[in-house]
Image (tube, rainbow, N blue to C red):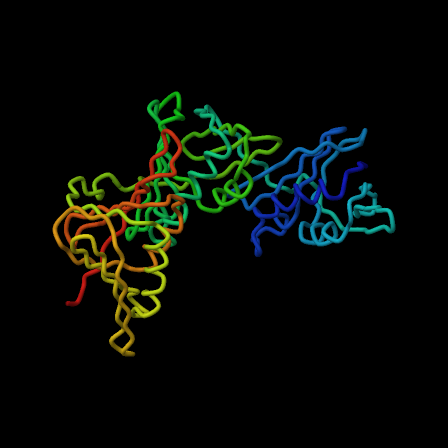
Length: 372
């Protein structure tokens, strides 16, 4: 088995695949990339058993075969090469020899047969979506997903597909984000929960991509196919909580404000908040928003006044500044609207501008009780 490939082209593909590999694997074979050669097509795969990703590269070769090559060693070697053709030859003494313009390097390999096979999806449903739209949907929601191992369903992003549009939801019970696209739809109704790791990989690869992504899914697995790559992952098992029930429908108090100004103010004031609760207080009266925080233990306090557009009764409401900062950071609009009903009910944050046609973002943040 022998093939010739460009060093930078190979490195670029392997760096993407390297994101799949865990730092400590239960099976030693998972520390390797699987190279499968079929004449001029080389398919490289990486897996952690839950997620498997593979890319197909064009190479010069007339042989076939499969070997598993140590990922870390190969990546570290490739990073040091300037652009040049590399020749890989699989020798009989269980080593792969790589020849560059200036030298030869031998790596021990394992048999490709030992590498776990990716799952084949039986009878999947299918949806096609633009890469950039999918990346955007992931980045707008994934930050709100939880990290609680006891509630695995909340540690992923909930995909809801229907003939009317696609909805992506993430929540950790303190904050919730619902992202909807009415300009893309699926042929039939389906819902599944995607784990964070494959979503982060997809987000990184597909950002700004004009390629179409084919999503195939059944009860237990999902497969994303795009460009020359495919990613298969196991879905999170379980029923997603009824998120619609927690979104308050009647919110008579509406505050509109410049997003950047609000974000910077919250950031500054939160430095003076209690280090365990991160609590900040919003006091709204007329066209004035007063943001304050106090850490009684250290006698630190801060207060800022901003002008805003407000319709509703005068009110005071407390929020965890970290959640508010995260949400404002993940919006790209100039102005945002915060809708509230009562100090003990969730606030709803939505962008006022900067959305594509058919794009809708609703963010919900739970209040914290103020100690008067």
